[in-house]
Structure formats: C-alpha cells, structure tokens
Length: 289
Length: 265
Image (cartoon, rainbow over all chains, first blue to last red; front, side):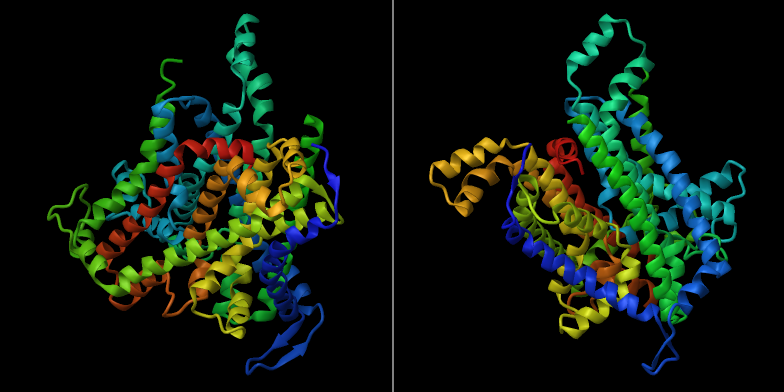
C-alpha cells in the first residue's frame, strides 16, 4: 500500500509514545545510573565509571550463566520449531476437530507462569509426581532436585510443553492462508509430499516462522519465573539462567551496580538479535511485494 | 497418511498430563498428596476449593488480577488503535525507527525492570494499586497491540478511508463508525493477546503490589511459605487460574488462527 507523507500522524502515535516511554526510558535510565556507580549500602553511591561493566565481562559466573542461557535457547528452538511445524502439518485443517485442537493446544499459553513452574515442580517429583514417578518406575534414575541432567531435562520439557503451541498456532495460520489451488496444481504435476512441503508450504510459512523463532528466542532468553519456581536455578547453579543470575545479584546479594551492568549488557544483546530478525523480516516483506 | 491424526492426539495427551495431575491433586488433602503416589484421589475432597472461594484473601487475589488485566487490555487497545492507524496509513518523520523502538520494548526482560519499576511507581505514589500494574504491563502489551493491529489495518483498502473523507466524515467519526467495525475481529484478537500476556505475567505484578492490589500469584506464594506447603490448596488455586484463560480461548477460538495470519503476530 502506498502511504501518504503526513507528519501530523505523530499526534496519533503520541499516547503510545508517552505510555511506553514512561515505562521504558525512566527505568532504563535508572539501570544505567546504577550500572555506573558503586554502593556500600546506606544510599551512598560513588561514581565508578565502567568498572562494573569490566567486572561483569570478566566474571566467570556471568560467562557460565550466558553459556547456559544460549544452550537453553538453542535446545528449545531446535525442538519446538520443527515439532510445532510437524504438528501444524498433521492437524485437521478445518471443521470441529480443528477448533478442538486449537482450544486445547492454546491452553498452556494462558496459564500464569508461576503456576506453570509450580505445576511442573510437583509433576516431576520422583515420589509423588506422575513424570518423576513414571520415569523411576521405568528404571531411569531421575531426580531433578539433585541431578543436573534431570533438572535440565525437566526445564527443557517444561518449556516444550509450555510454548510449542505458539509455534503450532503460527505455523497453522501460515498453512491456512495457502489457497487450495496450489495443492490441486501440485497433485496434477504428481509432486511428492516432500516437494509440496518444500516448495509450497514452507515458503508460505516463512514469514510466520521468522516471527515464531523471534518470539521464542526473545521469550526463552528472558525466561525467569518458570525455572525459578521449578528448580530455583539448582541443583547448585546448574539451571541458573541469565535472568535468575541477574535477580540473585540484584536482590539476593544487593550488588546493584553489577546487576545493573549485567542488565544493560543483557538488554543490548537482545536488542542486537531483534534488529537482526527485524531486518530479515522487513526484507522478506519487500521481496514479497 | 492414515495415521496422521495420531500426531496432534499424542501432543494433546502430552499437554493434558500435567494439567490432569494438578486437577488430581486439587481434590486430595495435603496429607494424601504427601503420603505417596496415587493416580486418583483416594478420599475425594473439595475442601481446597471451598477454602479458596470463601476466604476473601484468596478470592480477592483473583479479583485483583482480573482488575489490572482488564484495565491493561482496555488501555493497550485504546491507545494502540490510533497509533496502528498512523503506522499503516502514513509515512512520517522517524516512523520506521519508532516502530522498531516500540518492538524492542516487547523484548525487554521483566527481570531487568522489576527494581526500577518498583522505584518509579513508588515515587509517583502508585505502589500497590491496580493501575500501577496495568500501566507497567503496557510496556510489552502496547507494542504487541500496535503490531497486531497494524497488520489488520493494512489489510483494509485505503480507498475506504478516502471515500469516507469525501463523503464528509470527520476523522474520529470515520474511525469509530466505519473503520473499527471493519477490523472488529482484529480488535478481538488483539484484546485476547493483551489479556493473555497480562494474565500470565506475575513477576512485575508481584513486585508492584503488597496488600491492596495483591495478585493471585502473590497470594499463592504467601500460603506456601507461612503454613508449610499446603499443596492441595496450591493445586486448587492453580486449577482456578487456568479457568479464565480457558473461557477466553473458547470465545476467540475461530479467530486465533485468522488473527495470527492477518495480524502477523
């Protein structure tokens, strides 16, 4: 669509701008402010320049949390995106069953995050939870409260449970927008199932899949409540992801300067990835037009 | 592909298992839960539900949560409507940068902002009010609302606007009388997503409240810490948090897929 040049459109954007700016810029400035100072309690603050940033960037603890974070995000993307696409492909495309599937699948998305954590906390307990009890009954030694591998298995499974439906819904929407004529043409040409997927379905889903990956990347990168309630970052530090580490530093140890510097670095990283995806997305749009 | 139906079926079974376990526990007493593994309640009890529905501390948790979620949804959609219209119809100075900046706020980790938010809302005297949580949730819901609505609005041909202006409609009258009915399903989908993300977010909601506007999440943690783990009660409270979401999904079920496609969420 061709748009008209009109700078008065700013007035229409103004309320949004004011509300979001109040929520985004003031807290962000507070964080920047803390990150450049050192405090010893009693509300005494001393200018410390970039010391906090240097400390964070050289801290093995930060590196470890960052590594765990990337590992987590990478694993869940690798599972959720292909799984979500596969489920969307196998879903009934219309009718009552399609609605039933959508409603049931959307359910985990609407459960408050602390409830998701609490639910899985009990579900995976080896003595009274269905998952933990079941795995142990099958002869697998599983206890997420003291085995790092089990803890990782549990948080990954929880995230797959919680968020795969988002990918399914997006992929399903992409599939639904494909005109029936394409399939008929493919059938006449005798195209294989794989060719239909590769040359018709996948290109049509490209846009929504980029959005799905973007949303899953961002949300898994800032995940806090669910793993915090589930494992509390343990056993030891095995599942201490970036956000959990951050809150530990800020509220647990009251190391405001360090926590603030971590926040800024963290925020800049997400920003960079968003920019990357945004560029990809808008480019795709121009290609399509 | 005769066995195709198995894939979604197995997936739904997997989704239902933890929910089944939660419901199972909510009908047990805490002692029975702790006593050991059992797939069904031995002594079926609705004690936990009765406690939640009769104790004001509990049910006010739900009411408080509903109040700020509805407030947030109304504010987000109301301010996002004109902004999305501007983004979908006009080019203006800095529009692309502004749109990207808005989106970045959807990406701001709440854990980063929890403490500064607490200070901000305390300093303006809004700490422990519903409106504080509703405004704080605008941080991620307004960008999302603008994003979805812009997608829907771009699907409406511009000729409709032009015809209406020629017919002598003023902008506000055109917007309310003609344009909004055209994107009604888009507004519905947007409201659904705002509701959803405000309802599930608990970190900011918990940080910004203490007594008067305490959300259900905070009530749940309080019970867990003061009287040991009242697991039966906690499970029943968890089951009740699923219900509002389930009701909302049921109403928008036919729009979810459409909303994702057109709104390019």
